[in-house]
View 1 (cartoon, rainbow, N blue to C red):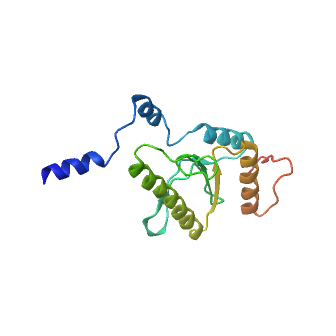
View 2: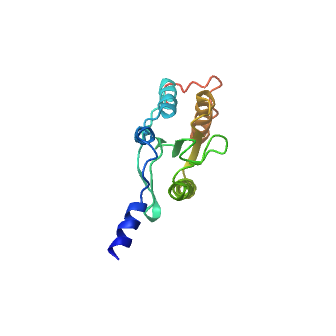
View 3: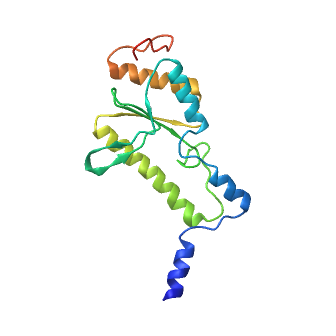
Length: 164
């Protein structure tokens, strides 16, 4: 009995395939990734102000942490990593410890969909980008959504003006 519990506990978390892989995975960040920083910098440069990694407590006890949040306009922006969110173009399935990674990555995608649904039901607009998407395209989409939520057309040059 005790041996079974010990074996299950050891299997609950995979052993790294190498020290290098372990260091690589440890270096992955939850917030302030390079694509997220680039998007935030571009939006800030246009005059937009936002909250970053801001927890939203929604109905039914659902908690969501978008990467960028425009609270007044109820716009939540996510910059999804290709590996962690299973990008159809660049997402790769790990060859080692598949018993651990497949369900984990599937749960990430399921959680993304649940967050999108909960935010939509709460009256929020969700904007998602893959980390490989062009920052210019991402900025243009966010500016368009913000202008739409404000009830006015987006500026033709993408500039936010003095009061976004």
